[in-house]
Length: 445
Image (cartoon, rainbow, N blue to C red; front, side, top):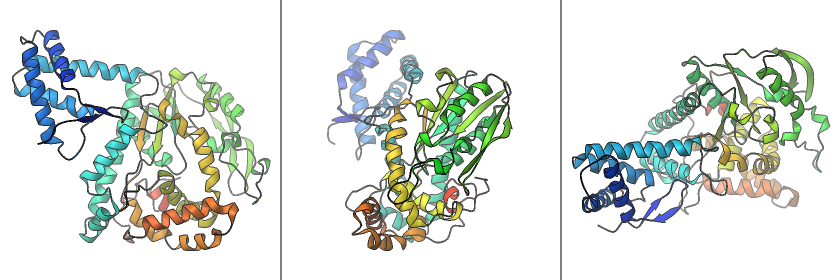
């Protein structure tokens, strides 16, 4: 058995393992509980903790939380019940301190490494962290089981998000559901709303899409393409005016936007927020500070949705989150917005530019993150889209103005090529987030 050398901190960083630090924490818990033992016993227990950690995590690097769980277990097994309770209370207090800090999600360079590690570990436990693993699952007839496991994980995260809202107390008047394009904000909102309604919370949706300016007001690029992915495509001043009025108990007349005509009509939808209702804002740019500047921070709860997928190929390259969401949007736009698959592909550079400027940098300021990526999606995505990529590569190979589309199509095609596709969608639930993109959902979008 080797030595325990490193552990993973809450921000995802690798640090050197420090046994004296574990012994010191145990000794402090003993002192706080009048546990009746000194530092020698604390050191002995720390050695047992290290041994147990090596046995439990021989093939992977443990996290700080994993190590703390083992400390509790070792204390209990060695008869130090009072000390274990003191240690548990200490952990809980430290957790509460972290939770009260603005931005409950730890992110470095806009990447939530701790969450990504948890996703990878879940995928490994279900043998779906690699293309080879998913192919084996399909070959063994276990694809429906993977669907079931993925859906359960996602639903549990939505429930946890709802619980976090409840834990914030009665001061929350606006729930912001944000995240990059095609991350699954609408379905996540529906599921969280169902969770909160079970606890007597009434939610009213604030439809931000109705605040788009007329499409003709936006500049075109050299391709004649409108850039409507920025926050400035929305009437931010009117949004803030209506939010302030609604939270003050006044009635507002919201506009209506027609995506087919690209036109907005003012003063169409009447809305009033009751004292026992919470506004729900499902918005691509909900975390952009100007979007809700009229609402005090103390009245907001910020939920972030992202496809934190961890699927790798034989070269140990991971599917990019943005490429995953692009494929979702290519399918959805083809049947819901009358856009061709290639139109979505060539427009994607606008999406990414806006995400990198107005969405992704705010992930460290949110209260909760839901991972909407489900590994079972990729065989279906390949079945529906793979035949489009060779055409895109051929069309844009020599068009220097379309190099983003060319390189992205090439990258996605090469990644998906060894993956088995899957045609039978019957095992995908009709209330699944994935059906927000492939169709057949019981939810109305």
